[in-house]
Image 1 (cartoon, helix red, strand yellow):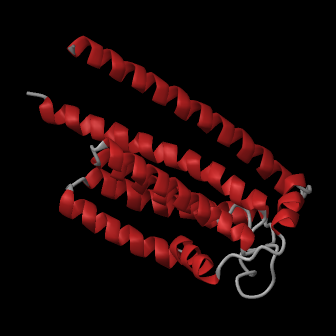
Image 2 (cartoon, rainbow, N blue to C red):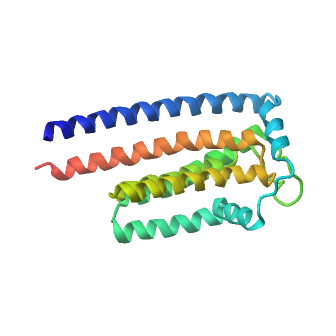
Image 3 (cartoon, rainbow, N blue to C red):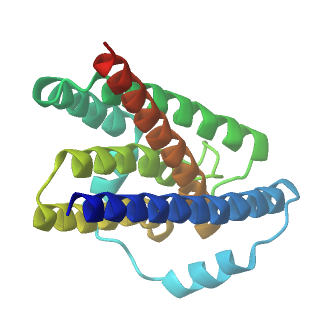
Length: 224
Protein backbone atom coordinates (compact mmCIF):
# COMPACT_ATOMS: atom_id res chain seq x y z
CA UNK A 1 0.00 0.00 0.00
CA UNK A 2 2.78 2.40 0.93
CA UNK A 3 4.70 1.47 -2.22
CA UNK A 4 1.65 2.27 -4.38
CA UNK A 5 1.27 5.64 -2.67
CA UNK A 6 4.93 6.48 -3.28
CA UNK A 7 4.58 5.41 -6.91
CA UNK A 8 1.51 7.64 -7.40
CA UNK A 9 3.36 10.58 -5.86
CA UNK A 10 6.32 10.03 -8.18
CA UNK A 11 4.01 9.93 -11.22
CA UNK A 12 2.30 13.13 -10.04
CA UNK A 13 5.67 14.84 -9.62
CA UNK A 14 6.80 13.83 -13.12
CA UNK A 15 3.50 15.01 -14.60
CA UNK A 16 3.82 18.36 -12.80
CA UNK A 17 7.39 18.81 -14.05
CA UNK A 18 6.47 18.06 -17.66
CA UNK A 19 3.36 20.28 -17.53
CA UNK A 20 5.24 23.20 -16.03
CA UNK A 21 8.07 22.81 -18.53
CA UNK A 22 5.72 22.66 -21.53
CA UNK A 23 3.76 25.76 -20.49
CA UNK A 24 6.98 27.59 -19.61
CA UNK A 25 8.38 26.86 -23.08
CA UNK A 26 5.20 27.93 -24.88
CA UNK A 27 4.95 31.13 -22.85
CA UNK A 28 8.62 31.91 -23.44
CA UNK A 29 8.32 31.42 -27.20
CA UNK A 30 5.15 33.50 -27.46
CA UNK A 31 6.53 36.32 -25.35
CA UNK A 32 9.81 36.40 -27.31
CA UNK A 33 7.90 36.48 -30.61
CA UNK A 34 5.50 39.23 -29.54
CA UNK A 35 8.33 41.23 -27.95
CA UNK A 36 10.25 41.10 -31.23
CA UNK A 37 7.18 42.20 -33.18
CA UNK A 38 6.60 45.21 -30.93
CA UNK A 39 10.26 46.28 -30.95
CA UNK A 40 10.26 46.03 -34.76
CA UNK A 41 6.99 48.03 -34.81
CA UNK A 42 5.23 45.33 -36.81
CA UNK A 43 1.46 44.97 -36.82
CA UNK A 44 0.21 41.90 -34.96
CA UNK A 45 -2.67 40.47 -36.97
CA UNK A 46 -4.82 39.12 -34.18
CA UNK A 47 -4.85 42.51 -32.42
CA UNK A 48 -7.07 43.99 -35.10
CA UNK A 49 -9.24 40.89 -35.42
CA UNK A 50 -9.95 40.63 -31.69
CA UNK A 51 -10.52 44.36 -31.27
CA UNK A 52 -12.96 44.31 -34.16
CA UNK A 53 -14.77 41.32 -32.64
CA UNK A 54 -15.23 43.01 -29.26
CA UNK A 55 -15.97 46.44 -30.74
CA UNK A 56 -19.21 47.71 -29.24
CA UNK A 57 -19.16 45.24 -26.36
CA UNK A 58 -18.87 47.37 -23.26
CA UNK A 59 -17.78 45.85 -19.97
CA UNK A 60 -20.11 46.67 -17.11
CA UNK A 61 -18.69 49.71 -15.31
CA UNK A 62 -18.78 47.96 -11.94
CA UNK A 63 -16.89 44.93 -13.28
CA UNK A 64 -14.44 47.19 -15.08
CA UNK A 65 -13.87 49.28 -11.97
CA UNK A 66 -13.44 46.16 -9.82
CA UNK A 67 -10.81 44.53 -12.02
CA UNK A 68 -9.06 47.84 -12.72
CA UNK A 69 -8.80 48.52 -8.98
CA UNK A 70 -7.63 45.04 -8.00
CA UNK A 71 -4.99 45.05 -10.73
CA UNK A 72 -3.65 48.55 -10.11
CA UNK A 73 -0.67 49.14 -7.82
CA UNK A 74 -2.72 50.37 -4.82
CA UNK A 75 -5.07 47.40 -5.11
CA UNK A 76 -2.24 44.87 -5.40
CA UNK A 77 -0.38 46.41 -2.47
CA UNK A 78 -3.54 46.37 -0.31
CA UNK A 79 -4.33 42.72 -1.09
CA UNK A 80 -0.66 41.80 -0.65
CA UNK A 81 -0.49 43.34 2.83
CA UNK A 82 -3.71 41.58 3.86
CA UNK A 83 -2.42 38.27 2.47
CA UNK A 84 0.96 38.60 4.22
CA UNK A 85 -0.72 39.35 7.57
CA UNK A 86 -3.09 36.38 7.18
CA UNK A 87 -0.26 34.03 6.22
CA UNK A 88 1.76 35.19 9.23
CA UNK A 89 -1.25 34.84 11.53
CA UNK A 90 -2.51 31.44 10.32
CA UNK A 91 0.55 29.67 8.92
CA UNK A 92 3.71 31.47 10.04
CA UNK A 93 5.01 30.73 6.52
CA UNK A 94 7.80 33.30 6.35
CA UNK A 95 9.13 31.88 3.08
CA UNK A 96 5.77 32.50 1.41
CA UNK A 97 5.63 36.03 2.86
CA UNK A 98 9.09 36.84 1.53
CA UNK A 99 8.39 35.29 -1.87
CA UNK A 100 5.20 37.34 -2.29
CA UNK A 101 6.74 40.68 -1.31
CA UNK A 102 10.03 40.27 -3.17
CA UNK A 103 8.28 38.76 -6.19
CA UNK A 104 5.74 41.55 -6.59
CA UNK A 105 8.48 44.19 -6.38
CA UNK A 106 10.72 42.43 -8.93
CA UNK A 107 7.91 41.61 -11.40
CA UNK A 108 6.50 45.13 -11.21
CA UNK A 109 9.93 46.64 -11.93
CA UNK A 110 10.45 44.18 -14.79
CA UNK A 111 7.08 45.16 -16.24
CA UNK A 112 8.01 48.86 -16.10
CA UNK A 113 11.35 48.15 -17.76
CA UNK A 114 9.69 46.19 -20.58
CA UNK A 115 7.20 49.00 -21.14
CA UNK A 116 9.95 51.61 -21.28
CA UNK A 117 12.04 49.47 -23.63
CA UNK A 118 9.26 48.70 -26.12
CA UNK A 119 7.63 52.13 -25.87
CA UNK A 120 4.29 51.00 -27.26
CA UNK A 121 1.49 53.55 -26.97
CA UNK A 122 -1.90 52.54 -25.63
CA UNK A 123 -4.86 52.12 -28.01
CA UNK A 124 -6.88 54.72 -26.08
CA UNK A 125 -6.60 58.42 -25.38
CA UNK A 126 -7.32 60.45 -22.28
CA UNK A 127 -6.51 59.71 -18.60
CA UNK A 128 -4.28 56.64 -18.33
CA UNK A 129 -2.94 56.91 -21.87
CA UNK A 130 0.22 58.60 -20.65
CA UNK A 131 1.61 55.26 -19.43
CA UNK A 132 2.89 52.70 -21.94
CA UNK A 133 1.13 49.57 -23.08
CA UNK A 134 3.33 46.48 -23.63
CA UNK A 135 3.07 44.20 -21.74
CA UNK A 136 -0.08 44.71 -19.67
CA UNK A 137 0.78 45.17 -16.01
CA UNK A 138 -2.65 43.90 -14.96
CA UNK A 139 -1.98 40.66 -16.84
CA UNK A 140 1.71 40.24 -15.95
CA UNK A 141 1.81 41.38 -12.34
CA UNK A 142 -1.74 40.17 -11.76
CA UNK A 143 -1.05 36.63 -12.95
CA UNK A 144 2.13 36.45 -10.88
CA UNK A 145 0.64 37.86 -7.68
CA UNK A 146 -2.83 36.32 -7.72
CA UNK A 147 -1.45 33.12 -9.24
CA UNK A 148 1.03 32.83 -6.37
CA UNK A 149 -1.75 33.45 -3.85
CA UNK A 150 -3.85 30.79 -5.59
CA UNK A 151 -0.94 28.34 -5.44
CA UNK A 152 -0.44 28.99 -1.72
CA UNK A 153 -4.15 28.69 -0.91
CA UNK A 154 -4.30 25.36 -2.76
CA UNK A 155 -1.17 24.23 -0.90
CA UNK A 156 -2.77 25.07 2.44
CA UNK A 157 -6.13 23.50 1.50
CA UNK A 158 -6.40 19.73 1.89
CA UNK A 159 -10.05 19.06 0.95
CA UNK A 160 -10.39 18.03 -2.69
CA UNK A 161 -13.80 19.65 -3.26
CA UNK A 162 -12.70 23.00 -1.85
CA UNK A 163 -9.49 22.90 -3.89
CA UNK A 164 -11.44 22.49 -7.14
CA UNK A 165 -13.78 25.40 -6.35
CA UNK A 166 -10.84 27.62 -5.36
CA UNK A 167 -8.90 26.63 -8.49
CA UNK A 168 -11.76 27.39 -10.89
CA UNK A 169 -12.63 30.68 -9.16
CA UNK A 170 -8.98 31.75 -9.18
CA UNK A 171 -8.48 30.96 -12.88
CA UNK A 172 -11.67 32.84 -13.86
CA UNK A 173 -10.65 35.85 -11.78
CA UNK A 174 -7.14 36.02 -13.26
CA UNK A 175 -8.53 35.59 -16.78
CA UNK A 176 -10.97 38.47 -16.31
CA UNK A 177 -8.32 40.63 -14.68
CA UNK A 178 -6.36 40.78 -17.92
CA UNK A 179 -9.00 40.41 -20.61
CA UNK A 180 -11.13 43.17 -19.10
CA UNK A 181 -8.34 45.55 -20.21
CA UNK A 182 -9.15 44.68 -23.84
CA UNK A 183 -12.88 45.38 -23.43
CA UNK A 184 -12.08 48.64 -21.63
CA UNK A 185 -9.72 49.54 -24.53
CA UNK A 186 -6.78 50.09 -22.19
CA UNK A 187 -4.61 47.52 -23.98
CA UNK A 188 -4.16 45.71 -27.26
CA UNK A 189 -4.87 41.96 -27.04
CA UNK A 190 -1.17 41.22 -27.62
CA UNK A 191 -0.32 43.36 -24.57
CA UNK A 192 -2.54 41.17 -22.43
CA UNK A 193 -1.48 37.81 -23.90
CA UNK A 194 2.21 38.72 -23.66
CA UNK A 195 1.59 39.92 -20.10
CA UNK A 196 0.08 36.58 -19.21
CA UNK A 197 3.00 34.76 -20.82
CA UNK A 198 5.58 36.81 -18.92
CA UNK A 199 3.49 36.57 -15.75
CA UNK A 200 3.40 32.77 -15.93
CA UNK A 201 7.17 32.60 -16.40
CA UNK A 202 7.63 34.81 -13.33
CA UNK A 203 5.05 32.78 -11.41
CA UNK A 204 6.79 29.50 -12.13
CA UNK A 205 10.13 30.96 -11.03
CA UNK A 206 8.45 32.25 -7.87
CA UNK A 207 6.87 28.86 -7.11
CA UNK A 208 10.17 27.05 -7.72
CA UNK A 209 11.91 29.54 -5.41
CA UNK A 210 9.30 28.95 -2.70
CA UNK A 211 9.43 25.17 -3.07
CA UNK A 212 13.24 25.13 -3.13
CA UNK A 213 13.60 27.28 -0.02
CA UNK A 214 10.85 25.36 1.76
CA UNK A 215 12.54 22.05 1.01
CA UNK A 216 15.96 23.40 2.00
CA UNK A 217 14.87 24.66 5.41
CA UNK A 218 12.82 21.52 6.07
CA UNK A 219 15.91 19.36 5.48
CA UNK A 220 17.98 21.58 7.77
CA UNK A 221 15.39 21.25 10.52
CA UNK A 222 15.37 17.43 10.45
CA UNK A 223 19.17 17.12 10.49
CA UNK A 224 20.54 15.86 13.85
